[in-house]
Amino acid sequence: MKVILDEQTIQSISFFQKLTGASVIDSLTDEDALYFVVDKGQYGMAVGKSGEKIKKAEGLFNKRIRIFEYADTVEDFLKGAIPESRKITVKDDAIEISVNGHDRPKVIGRNGGKIKILNNLIERLYSKKNIKLVTPMRM
Image (cartoon, rainbow, N blue to C red; front, side, top):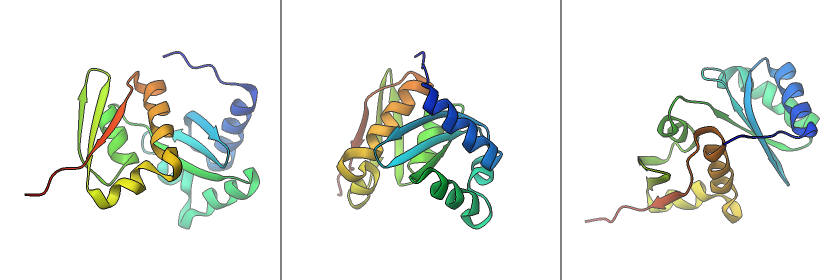
């Protein structure tokens, strides 16, 4: 999927990169947060010691900031983005993520916000769509 970034997004990425030293691969914005995908191995650099860089960035942007680390495969990306996942299965364009029932609300996010952002990112970065959460049955 070809992604076209607007001027404000490009400026946000540039500012965040200068502030943290991390290379940003992609960025999305919603009404109350900024989401950055940083290059592999640069999550710690983006957050900073004791979260100092991320706290400073949140103050300067006046928004919450969430960081995801890029991975070579969509499975590895989602494992990092959703640590609560038990199993991730990719079939064609559909992705099935198994999570425990008590983790489901946390994974989905308020009003489905987190899952919408993740859907958007995986479509942009990996040309995949349709994350489906499943809860395993207890025996």
